[in-house]
Length: 338
Image 1: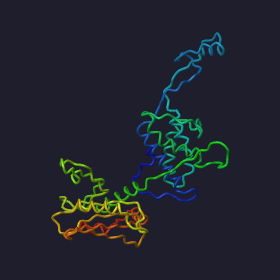
Image 2 (image 1 turned 120 degrees about the vertical axis):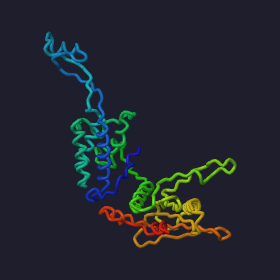
Image 3 (image 1 turned 180 degrees about the vertical axis):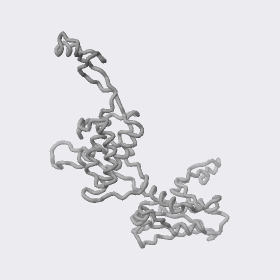
Image 4 (image 1 turned 60 degrees about the vertical axis):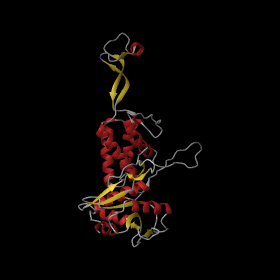
């Protein structure tokens, strides 16, 4: 559902008590709710029955006769009112109410409180529970679907109350695509590393000129490295970089990654340069690890290509970024400077 498709910036969350997962869920719920509020809180027509001094909507004849027989000062009416106090907003108000209480991170707690103030004003949080039936989502209320999943988690207290209780039980799975997350992290990291230099960082640069149909000369498939470093002005030097969320400090580089990265090196090599074609693999590693340096040569030994795997100490890099310290990756900066 894309409920966790979000990586705007690095954050440090409190890891005490129940752990930072609760804070992460609260953060996601609060930000999704505030995003909905910015676009406009959903409203819908709700049927009401009230005693009024004049007719509004439909006069309820039976109720009028039994409650106010022979009177016209008070009229029993049924009418439709456009309101924000609907289930969609009630679920967010209730979930945010729990989230702001259980979050341990001060900023997350403040953000959840701000979102709760908005939705608590427009909807009755006490009108729903974790047993509230699932809603049918259409184009109109689709933005609510992902935050509702998290809101229901908070309403269920994020746990199974009795593991051995008879009957059907419910739990949830919390999954993060770490490959995509690491790729996004590397992209932001390199953009910062080369900020203010002549090197342009191009993520997901699609190139359909490298693989052609030999019979027709038309493009056959696209080549899309995770990142392409280009020394400007002009694409005289282009170095492809692939981000791999794999523990290459503990094992050899997978053959598929070797073949893929060597192809990138050959494809983007500067034919006018005598230097070897070069490509990089960036992966999460530990402090002090050095990575691998592999070379492939043509049979006549006239052409060669190299790939270098470079470990990234992610915790150390995040700590440096958190205090706005300029970080560098010497292997990459040296490669593009020559």
